[in-house]
Amino acid sequence: MNEKYEKMWEDLGLDISAHDGLLKVLGQFYGDIYLSQDKRLKGMEYLDFVLSEVHGLRIKELQDARAAGKKIIGTFCMFVPEELICAANSTAVGLCAGAEIGKEAAEKILPRNTCALIKSFVGFKLAKLCPYVESCDLVIGETTCDGKKKAYEIFQEYVPMHIMELPQMKGACDRDLYMTEVLKFKAKIEEVSGHDITADNLKEAIKLINNRRKALQRLNQLRKAIPTPISGRDVLLINQISFYDDPWRFTAKINELCDELEKRVQAGEGIVENDIPRLMMSGCPMAVPNWKLPYVVESSGAVIVGEESCIGTRNTRDLVDETGETMEKMINALVDRYMRIDCACFTPNPERLEHIVEMAKDLKVNGVIHYALQFCHPYTIEAYKVEKALEQENIPLLRIETDYSMEDIEQLKTRVEAFVEMVK
Ligand code: BJ8
Image (cartoon, rainbow, N blue to C red; front, side, top):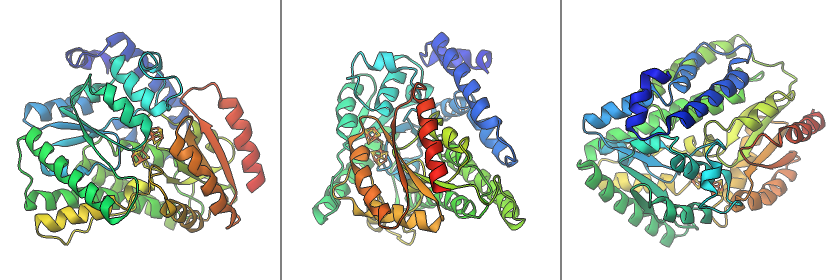
């Protein structure tokens, strides 16, 4: 891929030799973690292809779209309504990063004790490693955790940004605040894209993004089977790719994969034996290529059957009501849907605890692994309440705090193996 796209990467201002190093590591890592799996679905070949071209063909598509007049909008958070971006004939791309590679550059401007996700996206930009951020016409930040909102103050010296102010509670005045911010966001996207958002194009966009959520909901329903027909690693990858890929194509491909899964479930075929412990992950988002913990779990005699996170069910659980015909009704439907997100940045946040318990029971898991990035206060602190809520249902929980480095992999393995033995 390197020679074919080198000119494009140069034009985007990437550091070619550092970027080559990144792709090399990514390829090796992917081979070890993904391609080594047994009984993978044929439909996963599409995801392998997308991942192999994630800095190549997909970036070329984005450049072509830009040349044809579309705008590329980068996002970091579930609270940014993608529907408004699509309605304005623009494309949304997720910018969260899951690798350590730009850490040194990031630590020149951020404290070392900043969560790995923040250091990663800042580091990718500073070390000139990310063709997505270089393709963006506008990047949307949001006032969620302190780490992100303060990092954006510095990040906007490097990229054009719009910041959405998000509420921290869920009362009527908080909904009003979010509504104001959604309307400001709509105006900003119209200005940047040069396209008016109308009731007609917004209706189409709501359907488009709902359809992608529905395909992912279907996938989550099918993987509930015992034995589970797909690995947790593969589902994580699918969720990760949903933030980069073209939404029409992605939805069609995931529905094809679900057709294949359906057959597997009907035949009672799984990727593991019936008696392998079923675990659920809960907590911080895992951005590409953060596959460390799922790999450790699935090579320790367990299988992951659910992800309670933004790169998981928090992103797909709720649909936007599609019945509204007027702009006012549709904007209200968007606000209602997005205000249901149960991110740990909210206080209090009982909905998340309810969802975790409900999900653990529904998936018939033997235990839950709470995953938090080091220095992420919202999730590390909320883990205490998650543990208490699960304790009441006699569902065991293992709390993991880690970052993107590989240094703790043996230690993680020991802890996860002990947990798997315990829940067996
Ligand atoms: S809706 S989870 S995407 S804020 S891990 S950067 S919280 S210190 S990512 Fe998130 Fe939106 Fe919430 Fe989802 Fe901060 Fe924690 Fe780091 Fe995090």
